[in-house]
Image (cartoon, rainbow, N blue to C red; front, top):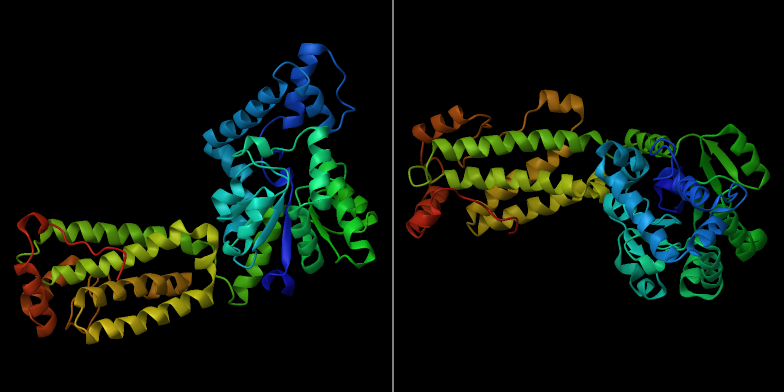
Length: 427
């Protein structure tokens, strides 16, 4: 557990946690290709390994092109059905918010680690020059569907891949990872040729000094086989394994629960509705303070929208990181206030409140509501439009300096831009 939370673990992911799970499609890719070959040639394919079958398939006219199209069509079919894609990406969605995981190695061709975990793909040797520039990396040793020329599928592909691992730059990177990180295999079976070749490579490179490797599998029979092969088996589903790791990290106060993203989306909708209602009922030329309330709401919207958009990076699941960001913004707010940049002060107030909301647990959210409106010079929180209008009528210049600032802003504002005030997502 300590190594997982300390970022000292690398996930080695196979197709079993992705599109080849029995929960995704009725037939595996291997079976689909085998059925087609049987119907065309009446061949016996059941005894062929995956690369042997793909090699045989590619021997037909335009076989390589047909194989690549078949791979592409399979992924597109899964992605076109949200239910299928949810099943194929359960593991990836769990992994996305687990910020300590920085390195992933996979033999999968799909782009789910890139799409849902914000991982930068490394497919060929030249890519690795930029390894340190990426926050999270996925080393795709069997290529990617986004680069057809890189896909490793046939026997000849596997031989070339093995040569690259033994002598190429990718192989050197892989050896470094194996020497310094604990490896957890997820999504493989012991009969999988991918796993056999990879694990043999690990043992050969590291000899007796390689670090203990683990394997996550839901099958009891597989556990015994893996144990006999020298790995420590963990009998459970890959996505569930990650969810339990994250639950432990959340209980320790290291991570935030994934529920924050759903809560952020709910608050975002409330803030947006308040923003629209305010502009429908108040014109900025009649109420200069609207620019500060709008800036405040924009700040909160931008904080929540960015958190939701960057879910896959795990940045907003990192409790300490969010606290540090809040402190940075509060220091900047003091500088903006000294300079009299009141729209920025209000914007930061909203942004900080949005981030603070992410840190609140369910009980705190029930007790402490987030103000939806803002006005300088008012000491109590404003939660609804009625109260906001009341405060404006009662004391339009409750904060004289900001009121004067708003009047000057309006004086210089073109009529065409006076309908709705918007603070851009920068300071």
